[in-house]
Length: 470
Image 1 (cartoon, rainbow, N blue to C red):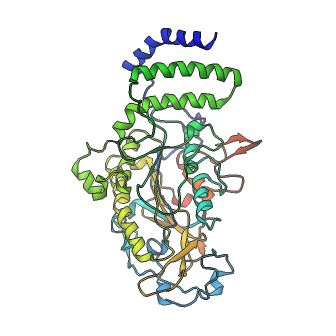
Image 2 (spheres, helix red, strand yellow):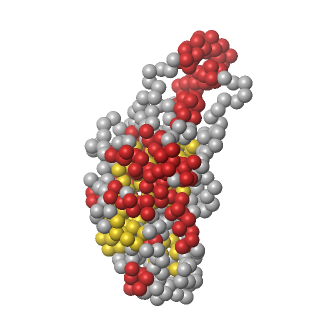
Image 3 (cartoon, rainbow, N blue to C red):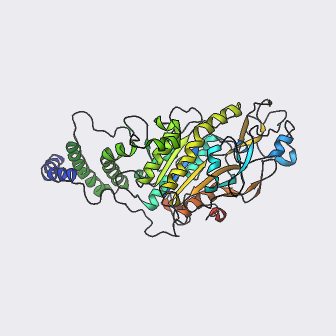
């Protein structure tokens, strides 16, 4: 059958079916689609993940890792016995001295467990009994791009599948009308660049890549029909296109053709589901008050946190938020105060909102960046102003919900906040733990690529961090 005959047949034979489907959505619409894991490897504790990624490397010493010794030794040089010859970035390696700098922000013990939290985070302090602070995260990457790529894809080299892509590939979707993997980026923040490959599918079929939602009238680019094309016309076009694609798939056995069909169909369903999910106008006043005044401004971190809750309610499996601006080599006190003002209340509000709706128990929430900051000042140290360089040796993240033990601090750094003393958590351990909470054995979620059973955690050892599990 030639293409003209095929199109004619489709137009006449499938047009009525397409219109019928449009007016009466099929029973499968909105229901889950399966991943490659038919049965969980372990009992899942979480159904979904909301990852609040703080791009740029937040300073753990100003927020979660209280080190009074640094204030006592203010201005003194970092001892060689502490540094132990560890490499520095080119930005501070040539400094004549590396002057120790304690945080100028007070810390207090908060919650039933007395967790040390900075005064920069008054809202997080109120929910600290719901979170586990991991003070002993570490990575091998000392520069932003490989470090962010490592956290997001399990490898410092670009081109691997992202965390969300792996999870969708393994577990599928809980709502066929929305992407299983959605990305939200705070609008108007300038700092280290973010690339779409951070939420890409890598060598997995392209249908598993994250879908970025933007603020404004078109949350997803090129989703709406162009002028002159109505929904019935678009449905008919897709049916014709799908028939051509299926002929191509039969001839070439190319899985990307099937992925393309799935993406077209998802886009069609999203034309009605995305506007509803992203419309915050129906949220009550007390919810906007909970997330703070920025939640009324589309594209802010606060508005994105509120949107993340709405997406979680609607079955989105992996919701990735990116908030830039933490790369404070200089002017750190003012810079980090501004960042905390933007992120503290909405991060805490997200936990409170999920909890009051009964969603926190099966939603894993993660907060953290790609590495930490040095205990010494980069550049000139002043009484009320200093900067900090990159520090991959130890940094802090927190996790809450979905199987996490609340009110806990895991791991410990040395009194100088420079080295890990106890219970180090490598990036691969972090990934293994997230997968475990979702019911996945990280060794068994694989995809054949270039002759290797590739995994999110790679080929080197990785372990589940049992000490953070409830």
